[in-house]
Length: 109
Image 1 (cartoon, rainbow, N blue to C red):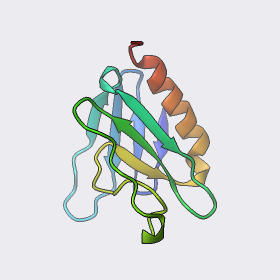
Image 2 (image 1 turned 90 degrees about the vertical axis):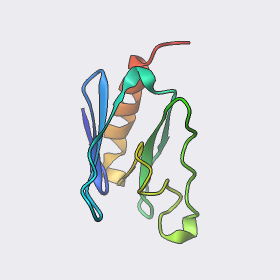
Image 3 (image 1 turned 30 degrees about the horizontal axis):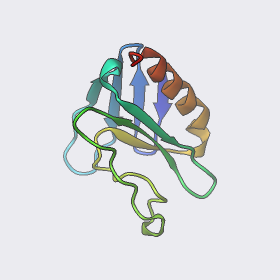
Image 4 (image 1 turned 90 degrees about the horizontal axis):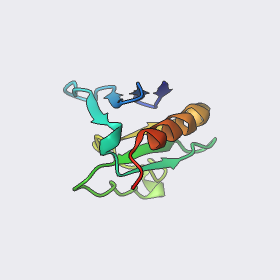
């Protein structure tokens, strides 16, 4: 299951989430997260005017704050946040399915 983002993509194979970002500067390594380690998932749908985002929250770290809407980022976490990815409007359906699959793979507390 894949979601194409603005500067990268998110893949989920049923156990591992892989966030691969298109580099700005030095090439960053893909981030791999076990679905069972995810404490929460955040999703904001993309619109015609602004991109949305998918973000995963892990133990020991809070969610990255959204940047101000007037900064050109439209209320998304910064690019440097390794656990989030901006998504265009056309990826909303795939992002909803990915979030649902990750939530289902998480242990229930």
